[in-house]
Length: 246
Image (cartoon, rainbow, N blue to C red):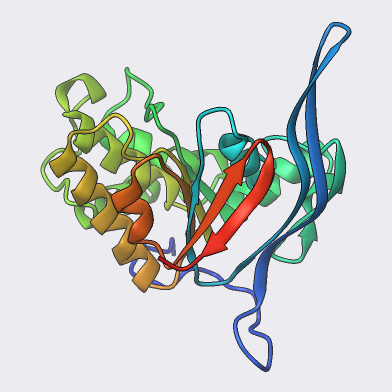
């Protein structure tokens, strides 16, 4: 039977003296090459995120925030250093193994939603289940519809993305991201293209998922939203410039 988001997300075992580290970066550098030119994006990053945290990553544009999220999810690999998530050295996994690992452990919410325009909300929300071949097609859609209801989109299951508002499209993206019950949800500017009311509603939804036990890491330029996280990490010029609780 497929799991619904009302079931707590999978977790790693807690350490005897407190929550276990879910994400650990050690000595991480990331540079990009364009011809003979090298562009450093991250430098000497040491960072830990404990299971069950909600962490906001803040900093100016171009500071390396999105690159950092890409390392958490295995979308990108470090030039140097180690990236360990849920006990797995994801920087060492093959592309096939990494794709399997990502489908089991991580949900991603993109800034620009990235919904497939020809699929309904339910079909978009079922995509991770389809790719993981979890259960029969009808059951996958049932799970997707229940997740859509959970994020406040009951009655919108058969709507195409073009028939939904920006806030509603982002809710579909969240329903899609949590389809496989990930232990980690990462979001890159999840409210960046929304009006203030929609942005606040989306954050309330993320906070609810966090209260249910999901670890959430998000990038934002919105200071008010960052202040609502349990911890804030500031990135400046590719380095960790500060760590604080709001």
